[in-house]
Image: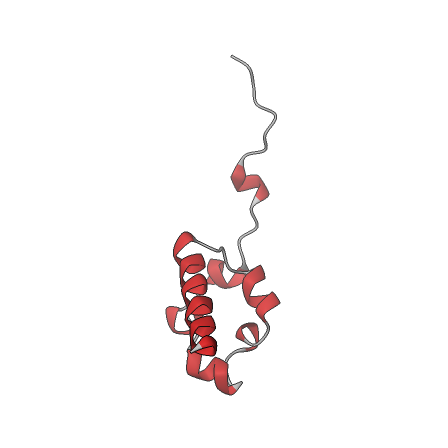
Length: 78
């Protein structure tokens, strides 16, 4: 049997301190879109580059973004 040259995931992945400590709660994990629009949301939600650097773009997230862009585009042409 040939040994793979890969490093096991548990030696590569660094778990964030908020996950280790259990400090991450769902109410701070999910953005309130009203707060984002008003500029009062947590800092990570104010800068798209910060938010998306911590967010995995799942199929559903990509679909949501696509649907939002299409609706906005339709409202501009109406």
